[in-house]
Length: 541
Ligand code: MN
Image (cartoon, rainbow, N blue to C red):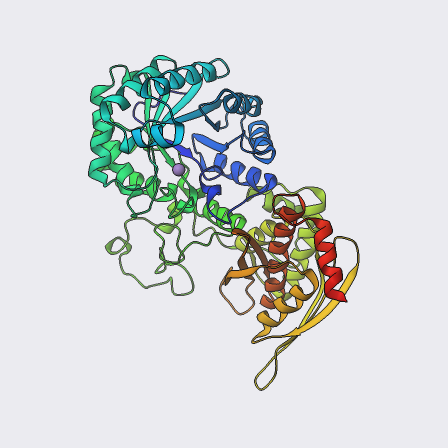
C-alpha cells in the first residue's frame, strides 16, 4: 500500500464489524454490491469479513477479493484471530486480490489474559509475534490489533506493539472496543504509543472504536491530532451495539475543517488538498445502498446522511428560502451527492437506457434480475410520470437483495376502511411447491395481512420493527417497507418497495420470513425443514 504520510487512510469495516449489527446480515451478493460501491466511494481498505468464521464469510471475502480487489482497487482485508488456522483461512480467501491485508488481533489486557485467553503476558507476546510473522509469510500488508488496548497496562501494550512491528506489522490498530474512552483520553493513548514504541515510525497507527457514548467520531479526530493515520469506520455508523464510528461523519469533518486539521498532518494550514481519498459525492448513494441492503434505517436527524441533514435545501421549497446559503450551511448537499436526483427515465425509455443508467448507478444485474427489474420499471412508469435515480435504485436494490424465494407471495388482497373489519387474503407457494390460501382479520390492513401470512407459513416470530418510507416526494411515490423480526434471539430483516404500501408490507414480511426459514432449514437454527413441514401439516388439520 502506498505511503500516506499526509493523507488519512479510510479503512471501511461495514462488511465485517458493521455486519455484526443484530439483523444486518447480508448475503454474498449483497456484500459484493456494497464492496463495489465502497470501491467507487474511494475507500483505501475494505475489511470484507472474517474468513475463518463460516464458509459463507470465506466465500464473501474470496469473491470480493476477486471482483473488487483489482490493480486500481482498494486493499481487501480479512480479519483473523491470532491462530494459525484463522490466518491461513484469511490468506486463502484473499489470494485473488491484487492488494491484500491480513488483520490479526489478540487481547492485551490482564483481565482478558487471565479470564478469556488463560495465558501469561509473555505467552501473548510470543503469539502476537508468531502470528504476525505467519501472516507476513502470505502477504506484505499485515495489520495487528491489541484488543482491549484501553484497559491494557501501557508499558506492556508498547512492548507488544514493538514486537508486532518488528515481526512485520505495517499497521497497528488501537481499538476502544467498548466505546468507553473520552476523546482526550483516546488522544493521550495514541500520543503515548507514538512516544513510547521505539519502532512506531515503521507502521501506520490506526484507530477503531464504538459509539456507546456517542464519542467515536470525536475520539478519532482527536487521535489524528496525536498521530493516527488510519480510521476504521462503517457507512451510517452501523455495527455492534451503538455502532462504529461513521465514515461519512469522519470524512466530512476532515473535509469541511481541513484547515483546522492540516497542521496536525504536516500540511500548510491553507492547503486545499483533500485529506482523504474519498469521493464525497458518492457518500449519499453509499449510505442509501447500505441502509437498503442491511435494513438498518438512518435516523432523520443523522449527521450528513439523515433525511433532515440538508432539509432546507431539498424538496419543493428549495428556491428562494435563503438569501445567502453560507449563512446557515457549512457544506452543500451536492458535496455528498444528494442533489443528483433528477428525472432520468420515463415511460418510453427502453431496456438499454434502463440498463445503462443502472450501470452508471453502480448496479450490475444479471440477465434474470435485469429482466425482472425492467418489468418493475415499466409497471412503475405506468403509475408514475417521473422516474428518478432514487426510484431506480429502489427497484434495483429490491432485485439484488434476494433472500432465497422459499415462500412466494402469489397474491395479496386486503379490504379495510372506516366501520369495517380489516380482512386479508393471501395465496402463497410453499417450498414444496404447494399453493396455500388463507385469510385473517386484524386491527389494521398490515396486521391482517401478516396474520394471514402467518397462518400459511407457520414460522413463529415476533415482529419488532416496521417502517414505511417514501423514496421520493409526491402522492405517486414508491413506499419502501423495512421490517425486522425476531426468532430464537436472532433478528432477520426484510425490505420491499412498491407504490402500494400494503403489497410492499406483505412482500417485506415474506422476504424476512424466507431468510428466517433459510437459516432454520440450513441447520443454523434448531428446527428442521421436516419439522416445519410437519408443523404446517399439523396446522392444516
Ligand atoms: Mn469493533
